[in-house]
Image (tube, rainbow, N blue to C red; front, side):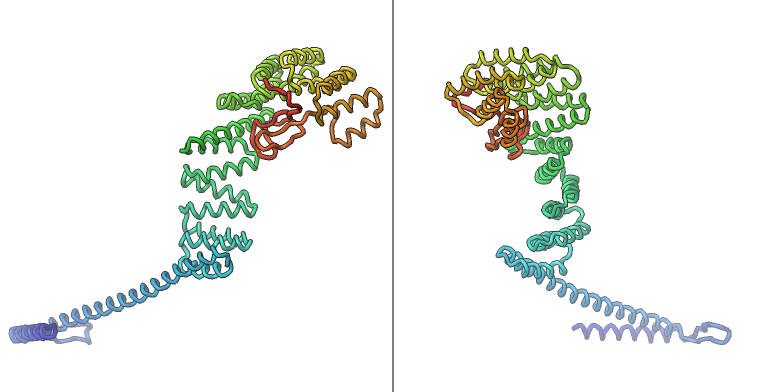
Length: 441
């Protein structure tokens, strides 16, 4: 059918040509140069122009068909390569799960060559390098992948994890910062970057990040836990400011600490320290006095009061304070031991022995009470050499700091601190329970 139509079309064209040729018998002269002239029939010229147009149209059609054919061949080839890449990726993941890291990496590398911008393949390939203990290659793969996928949170998160595991904390922090820049509510990145800042003791930055964690946390129980953590971070930031001499700044931060959690004992102790450093000893004493009556296990507070009175050369005032507290809490063994310790510090050896022997008669035996009594006996006998050897053997200083224990993890500490060095939780240290009759306020 197509051939017949084409034949009819050619006959029509030829008929038109001959008709026009008979109607236009004259010729046209074309002068190219003075030496080159051409004489052509108008109908012939028209026919040549038409024929040239047909030829160009045919050639253009052939060229378009050729391009389309080449494109289809390339697409089929690319589709085949992509399908093979997906198959390599699938098999590689299976091998990775089975623990065959080497074979998995080889397949992942083939898949990556075929699909260099695929985020899943990039992350999985980096994982194979990490399992082979080749963190630098893993980081390089992720960094190259990030260049071609600058908005990929998955690549950035993997990059941060790999950098952290390889010990490159600055690179990990930068990656987590980039994640937060792209997704300010990303809890995973916020928590990880916060933990890095805690590790660096960058307390102000850690507290700022923790505020964002709290704002974006949807789980009520988790939010309560996060609020407890920010109290500790703000406290450390305030303590750092105090140590740097920025006392006014420390006071502002401590107000936020106590506003956030007024039952946070280290905050009250530090508030007294800041006021004391400012020369406001009277207000510092008031803060500690309130804390002493408010909190159970407030031995660190009375030790602060003790240091303050001794520094002011007023031992009678702290002795009077101990006596009042013991009268108010007669079953508190810790107070009686701390009083015995104070007697030794003031060289009131006989008083110390009397108090410690009374504890023994009451059936109270502990390592710390034995240490104090042993030192008291040595001093009464004036056997200084024996005392020195005794102290060196026990690793104790001349102040005989009482032992403390963490209520969260049970870690024993030689001195009170705002934060347990084992479990890293704040406000968990209290003086070790020295007898079954010890009580709290």
